[in-house]
Image (cartoon, rainbow, N blue to C red; front, side, top):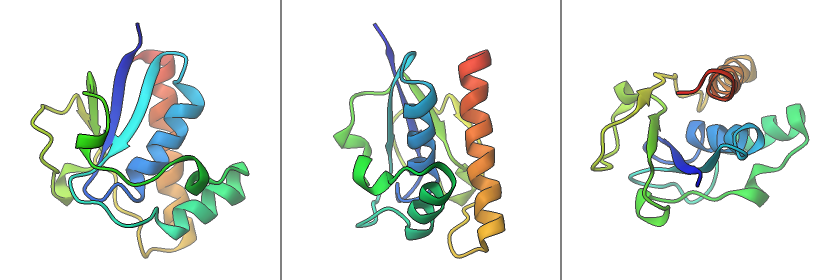
Length: 130
């Protein structure tokens, strides 16, 4: 039986959504992949949607939606996108904290740098485990 892995950040609109996208793309044979937040935005970050579409030709707004931790199955593995941005309360210890900068409102180059960091970290899970 596959374990549940959850990528967590405050609003579940940007970094955690990108991590969920790459997780489903590269880890779905190993894990049930989710993302969540403690407070959600009404939609996924428009720059995240646009850049994933430009870079990977996938529309994450059609595949995913913002959700709180209450709306996903209990995670076995919890990865924070960056606790120094304010950790959401999930009533569990984080398995890892990736400490990624929030690219919201930054240049495309900065945003793409964070997208690439997330992809690299997800691929590292695939190749080396947590």
